[in-house]
Image (cartoon, rainbow, N blue to C red; front, side, top):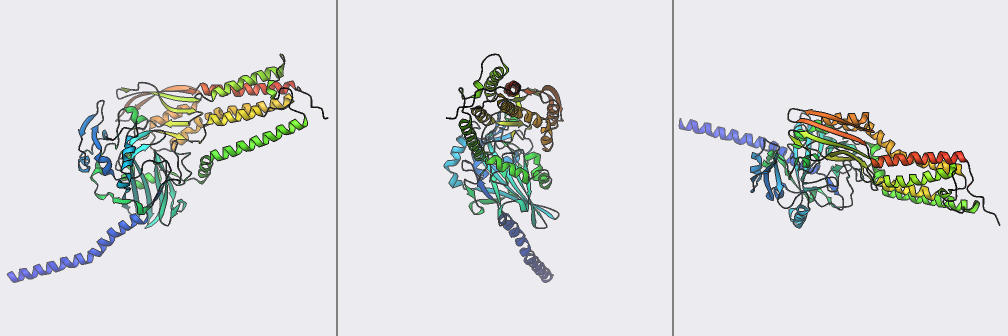
Length: 555
């Protein structure tokens, strides 16, 4: 009996060893294949030269953070925070990590990070998701601080995602602020299998081109003139067994509800970013992103090189203007008053026209320094009321058009950012216009010039009205934009010049009222008035049909 049991035991051991021998290569091959895939497609990151933060291991951040619970008076939960401890706090979004090295209002976190940046090195996190015949490869990057132009906050999570169909890469998705962008594999710049990721300075939004970002997230500066991180220069950690992933709170300090509204609160981690859509539904999330558009890329290239283009056009305009003035001088002279806007002699149409023109110039210059359009809101939600109106849309000559999505996970974004402010562009245009009046001796010719420039001054406001009537189509493309925000934009689009509305919010978790007021601001009215006045002055001069001075005598 004992011998029989012994034999059966040997047989079982033999079978067990045989199974292990058979399965080991398969299991080992599977693991190796996954690791190889992660490294084979690891991105190459291009940073702007003034970037201060790079992808880092989250342990560094956790080690220097306290754990809090957000309420009117923040509740301290732990000072000795560990990844395993964070895993316990997975059932509430009001938890947050507060980096003790600094605050969102200073640069201490960045400065402390720089002291040991070389020692810390660079780290990415990766995971593979298999869904039928489709596979998703995600690379997650954590930065200790978001130092964007528009908003600053502790901690920053960003993502690069590659989608495979039957083991072949077909699509790539990059995270960008409130959403992201997708492109086909063939559209992405790469070295072999290593895709190029162009990281915006401070905000760390990811772009497909080194000149992109001007039409996307607010005030993004993207370039390839700084640090380049190749796969051989950073570590990749598999996200399979990371305890801190379960942490449902924010990776950065939050002091008030205004921090959430203005995008100055810390971000949620990978499992909870965008309400968990990126983690749990990566394909659906990726497909919801706007695709790379070649026509928009051309426009972004123009905006990226706008300074060079603007200077070139300005120099060309000055050259042409100088040539024309020289021709006038040689042909008829420049007249006794040089600038034809100064021919004022009595109560005639040309004199009144020039007086109106001079007044319009002063009004236009003043309008360049004031806000053109404002949309403000007062919140009264869940017992919380804002202490002062919050700007949700602001348009001026310095920062252009900016909108705030009023979404707790988003923040303010800009639509189109320029190297030069609009006010400087219009100001130089006004200066060239004034210089261009030198030596014009016929009121009809001068009047036509007035009318053309008057229309140019009206264009910013007319374009503004056009943008506001069509901005709802932009917002509709943002799937995550709250329904009440879309309702607000709808009302503004229907009556863009001015108005107000009260929106009731009740989505189960949040209820209250939002009062919104909008309208053309003082700077906008000044530009409108200047444009109309300049046009009227031009009509008066054309109607007068006068000669300002006689042609010079040819000796």
